[in-house]
Image 1 (tube, rainbow, N blue to C red):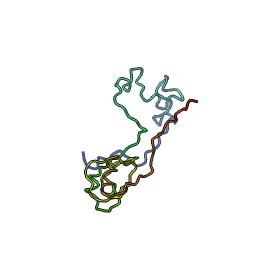
Image 2 (image 1 turned 30 degrees about the horizontal axis):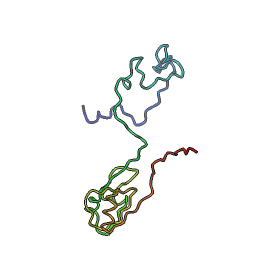
Image 3 (image 1 turned 120 degrees about the vertical axis):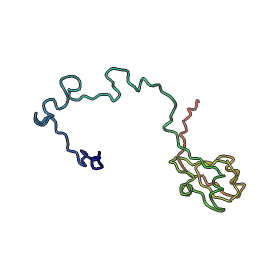
Image 4 (image 1 turned 30 degrees about the vertical axis):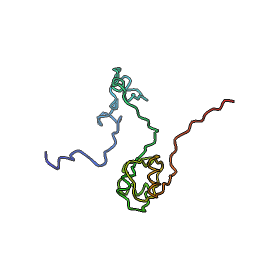
Length: 161
């Protein structure tokens, strides 16, 4: 194999397959649908997991685990990490945390946790704060600003009269 064989047969713009245009085209008569049967009929569509009546793989493999796709993704940052990265009197926002690579992933809610010690006076903006984090921020003379964000859905409780 040579290096120029790598893209052999690959074209930038592939021509559309014109079916049912006579025997000379190679796709005439049955138009690639074979002879008779369910697949030869107009409007035929097969379920993606159908395996000819055999029990499909998706039903043979047991279900495991749990995934709540509506749950908020919470990114957590400890006050000890903030103390190590930021200078005294600095303002900590989601943007500055992203710039300093303390929070790298995509998230819906930013929460500050109280692990570690906070010796610097910081103005920290986040969606949520743990009790211990709030105590440490206030003890160091800093400020905790609660950002508005996605709130969990509160179910309506029917009152019985």
